[in-house]
Length: 138
Image 1 (cartoon, rainbow, N blue to C red):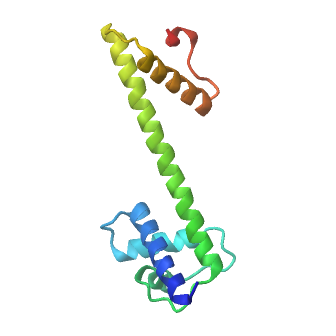
Image 2 (image 1 turned 60 degrees about the horizontal axis):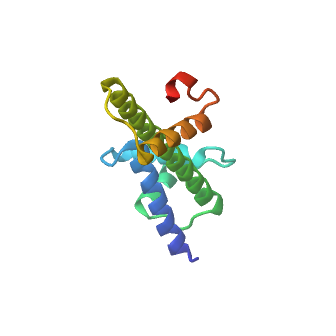
């Protein structure tokens, strides 16, 4: 990979980090500070604000391997946290819908519905050691 390719990839990584952590419309100073903190997390040689600015704008002359690895690691961790939050929101919605139908006394039977209830129970059992109580499974 050439130096120009590394700079372009780092620009993409840092802009995605800044978008996800500070918001798309955030001021440049806030975006630089977010990138600075993300890349410096666990780094033996911290980068400066000017270096973070160069990454965001794609003006860096070179990219060190550790800088790119830190950015990738932080981005992957952020994506994983967002995925978990999204999954939990979907499970909470499904739980709420099941409870609403049970409270209304609506006919709530069938292979598909039972599959959803089982899926929800398995997901909650996996996520926490408590799971559902026996009276909630009926």
